[in-house]
Structure formats: structure tokens, C-alpha cells
Image (tube, rainbow, N blue to C red):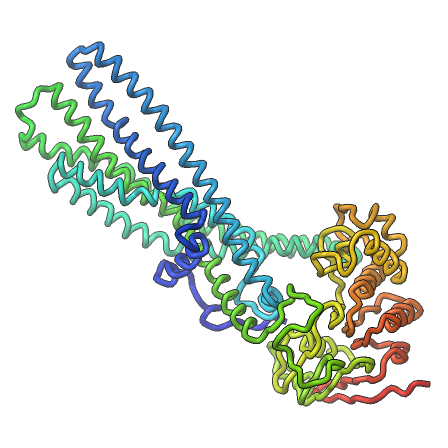
Length: 606
């Protein structure tokens, strides 16, 4: 059913370029929406803690050179005071490091919350989730991107945030200290060394980002295969499909593992580069210190004074190099962040694009179920009209073969419509167009009634049940009890369950509000699921009920009883079905013959 998305997106290859930076900045705007946001406060707190931590680290780093002095001078009192200071600084540094990590963890939780809720807001707006999962194939595994990729992205980013935000300050300070100790030679040598390391690492990181994105896609495919087996365990068992599904699942696993091996091979060269630069950096620091010594700059110092000076200068140079090597060491983490940035940014772009389009064509969202007519709906037609179709033609996605051509139709209150036809002639497709899930190829489709209670309600071919109590299944998708509350609403729900033939379900679940730990699809038969859908229909009491083979798993007697109750509740039906027994509950029949042809006739009541 899915159709290819935009070519540019489908062929886009993840790279370390300006587009990736733009995606990253767009995500940061979600993290930091304003200067007064909680995340900005935590970020500034982290910066202050990191700065204070660096000040303490600098003092701790000078202590070895001071030990050379007091030990060389055999100063016992100075030794005791220095040891006490060292212990105090170490305890303070440990506390600051712990608080640093604690703040990073808080940022991780807050970032994940904000980014996930932002994506949820876009994903569940109008019918974006339907379009993304059913009608488009350029964004793979959106569920994995929202749940797993966001979690990993936030965790990896929070783990390096402290080092990244403090780096400009430490680099500036220790560059100045290094210049004071060694002249221009030290900073220039170290900066040149870092630039070379950065260029090498960027070259090595590019292929890793591409392969990481591919790995995450295969991870999602592998997880989806297991979810597919879990959801369809019973039909698979009837087919005795264990061996076949075992082979197919293992095939996905092998593709995933092969990609992981390739990713590890590419990361190997990055690790070699990182470790090489780490160890060469330690040698470079002593080379920088040695040059002024062998030039005789410190020839007038005693051995003790020279040892103290060398220790101090070595700490400054080594720490400056360490600041650079820490950034180089982050290459592996940053390559992961870049890969997740690409996947999340790609999803965010698609969601924003679809949300803008849906906002332009939607007046009332699904979550805005109101009893009063929403402003902006057409008012030219009488209020007893639900749908108005004018010369509508329908194509299936990814197909140029018309299902229905030039259909003009007006569905009014009390004029129920039965839609029949062979498989593949467009019956469900017509309902998708009525429900706004698909767009018609040409013509206009107007829904002139509200969606929801006292308006239009769709019962799809496959019943849908959310997680929750029995009450929540009956009132779904309402968030609150409507229109009554308390015992009066309980009586309504129980009565409608009885009318739907599910009087025993209350006892099975332990009550309307008893939390159950089962999957409703596992404990209810297909017929019971359809009956529970009708109990929901009776509770919500729409003016128009659009039913897509909603009684296919029931007997004709049960079907007739449910339709009769719906009529008594004042519902007008738009039904898809095959049984002739349905005709007595409808006024018109629309027969779809395939190839775009159709026939609309009035049903003669006997």
C-alpha cells in the first residue's frame, strides 16, 4: 500500500555536511525553546559546575610541582599543609564530578521527554501516523526512531555535553598558560597536531555515520519481524509456520549482523586513529617542554627549581593536549550522535511537512471531538447531509488503475447506503476517501457532519482496541466519560454490552475499571471483537455509522440484531457488506463493478 516518498529524501545519503548541522540545530530548538526554559537553566548549571570543576582540577594539577618544592626543601610543615589541601581539593573535585554527571543525567531525561513529546505531537496530529506508516515508504520504522533512536541520541549527547561546553574555556585558558610557559612554539605545535587529528577523524567518521544509519534501519526491521509474529501468533500457528518464520527471521538477523560487522570494521580504523593520537600527544608535550630546556632558557635554575618548573609546565602542556585528545576521543560517540541526528532529523522534517499539509486541509482534528458544530464547516447544505461527493474518481496508491470513476453521491440522514462489489473493486477505498485517509484523484468530497458522537463514526474492517480497562474500550476514543458520569454511565455501558451480546465480559474482566494485563486481541474471538465494536458504537451513538464489513465474523441473526438496535438508536448506516440480508437496513445500494464503473439503485422494500 505504501508509495515511494520524495525522490530526494529516499536517495539521501547521510553525510557529515551542512544539512546534518541544520537537522541538529532544529533538534536543539526543541531542547531549548526559550532562554527561560528548564533545560537552559540545567545547561547553565552544568556549565557553572564544569567551570568550577576545571578550576579545582587546575589546582590539583599544580600540587605535584609543589610537592617537588617542599620535599626538596625538606619542609615538614609545608608538606602537611599541602597534603591537607590536596585531600580537600580531591574531595571537592569528586563531589563536583558527581554533580556534573547527575546534571547530565537530568538533561538526558528532560531532553528525551521534550523530543519524544514533540515528535508525538506531530506524529499523532490529524492522520499523520497513518500516512507515514501506510502511504509512504521513505521513512523506515518511525516507531523505532521515536522510541529507540531518540533515547540513544539523548543518552549519547548528554554523555558528552559537559566536555563539549567546557572545551572552549579550557582550551583558551590552557593555551594562554602554555604560551606563558613555552612561548609560541607550544600552542602552535599542539593546535597543528589537533587540526591534523580532526581532519583524519572526519575522514574516518563519514563511512561510520552511513553504516550506523543502515544498522538502525535493519535493527528496526528485525524488531518488526518479531512484533509481526507476536501479533499474528495464532494464524501463524494454524499455518504451522514456525519453520518458515524461523528462516525468515534468521535471514533478517544475518543481514543485521553483517552490517554490524561492517560497522565494527570501519570503527576499527577510527579507534586506531584515536589511540595513536592519544599516545603521540603525551610525547609531544615533553618535546614542547624539552626545547626551551636544551636551549638553555632555564640554565640558571637549581635542579629542585627546574623539577618544579618542568612539573608545572608539563601539567599545562599535557592538559592542553588532553583537552584536544578528549575531543578526538569523542569521535566515536559523535559519529553515533550524527547517525541518530540524521534519522531523527529526517523523521522530524517529514512530520513537519505532513503536519503543515494536514493543518491546511483540516478544520477539526481527531482529538477535538465536540458536540457543537465546529466553525468553518460548510453550511450551504442542509444539516441532515453527512457526505457530498461530486464526480469523484479514486485511484489506489502506487497504481494508475482507477477503482471508481466520476461518482456523485449525497448521503443524508435516514437514507442508509449499502456498498457492495467483488474484492478489489474499491469498497474500502471509498470509505478511506470518505474518512479523509486517502485523497481522491479528482472531484470533491465534503464531510458535512462532525466527526464523533452525534456525528460520524467509522468502524474499520479490523477492530481496534487500545490498552486499558473494559470501560476504556467502550468509550474509546473519548478521553472522559460522556455524557453522564458515575453509576448512570456504568448502567449505560453494561446495557450496551448486553445489547451487543457481551453480558459475560464484565465478569471476565473483573469489572468495568479493572486493569487487565492481557492483549484484547488474544482473549476475544473475532466475533466478540466485532460485538465489542458495536457496543462502542451504541455508547457513542453517532448520527451516521460507517461500517466496513463490521459483522463479517457474526451470523446473519446476530448481524440483524445489531443493525436493528442501531436503527432504534437513530443511526444512518453507510455499510460495506456482501450479504443480501443487509439490504433491509438500507435505502440505497451502490454496486461497484471494477474498472471504475458503478451503479446506484434504490432498494425496494418488500
